[in-house]
Length: 276
Image 1 (cartoon, one colour):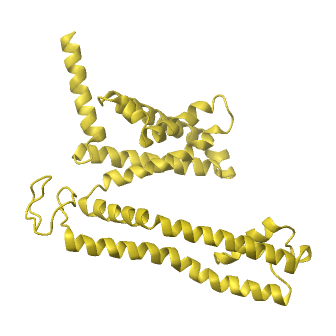
Image 2: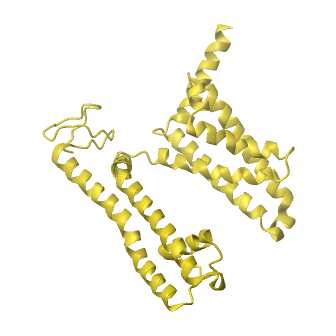
Image 3: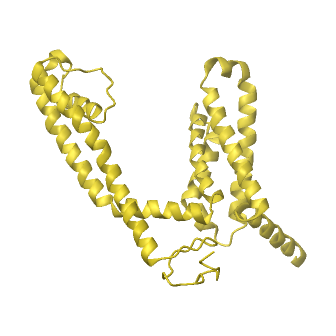
């Protein structure tokens, strides 16, 4: 029994290094193969919706989808086996996504068309961030994240103002243009306002009265400012964080740690030289 257990522990250790070891050659190779299969799986789902291609290669598509599903199933089981706390992975974001990636193919036996839900596998491409877990990349991602969090209050207030403006302008256009111009209801008029304000301009509804065209012109001009404001808010926070980082902190390019005083020489986390 002890021999079987030791072999199992060795297998768990090797599987853990390959599956979770993003800093190892085997781990990176495994992640690259995994991402390649995810891309192939998403491509197969898209090709299956092309009627002519599906009729000609339906059996081959199904066979490839099953091969990929089996691989993902084995990978999911190994991820659970080779860690000490399986529940932490099972109920994590990646664990739920991994499970959703393999369920649709099995459910296709019971529910017609459920295999199209395999497009969820595209969410597994988020694992790309783990492969690109370089200190420079991680530092930039953290800076962007902190800037978005710091500016969330201003952005929410701005979005609230835009929603109120769309309701007011949409209601006004409903009164000015009326059903004859396609503004059949206030919700439809609000939809027109949002489309115009975001400079999308589908053109399915257009004002025909001089007053309506004047209001539309104002909305179009407002649209340019609306695009610029959120970008300016986030950019200002990024600039602020960058200046603070240069003034008060040093970045470790070995482990990605940033909590260092400006006069620090070595990383408090890994001991690397901060000036290199």
